[in-house]
Length: 237
Figure 1 (cartoon, rainbow, N blue to C red):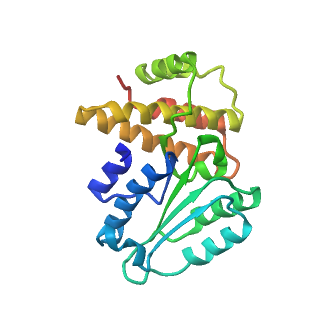
Figure 2: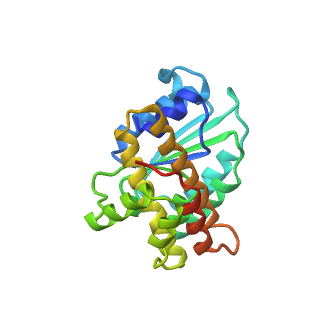
Figure 3: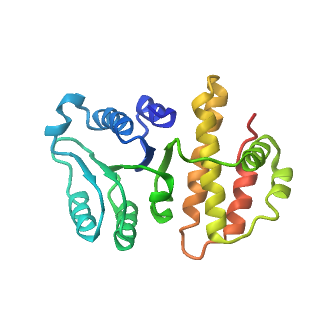
């Protein structure tokens, strides 16, 4: 299980939605464990639980998004939460917009787990609404970018501002920066054994999620968002 999701299972403090990227069956096993905790039932009884919905889609289209909207609007029946596990190979553009609105507007009692095969198969408008858990072995960063992000994490606020001064304030560029930074943080989190440093990485990921969400507010300022992230992120070794 991904260390972020494992931590949420142990604390019981779950996010509204998660994006698991990579091996479908491995991710599915992790999600079902989390769903059992959320619904307070044995994992073996999930398939018959009225508040658990699991489905696999080769293509998630407009009809599927309408069905999800209807199901997510229903109140829990046997538990106080509802859990949706969706494994999706691809989206139509219209469905991507709709599912983003569903994630944003659904009740707090709904928890969504989306499994996708690769990072680029998920539209950014949806990625921004979810806790991204990277398990994608095919997603690679160049050595140059790894060195840049490693230096960014280890330096203080002033030096970080210098490092990002030449990064464009374009929304897509800033989103790419945050997504790649999340990959680096998630990668390091898997390796970290010291509790205090682990907590720092976890809080950094949570801060990153907040800043990425700001990008999709009305009239965002990408330049201010990336600078705010540089100033608030704790120094990591």
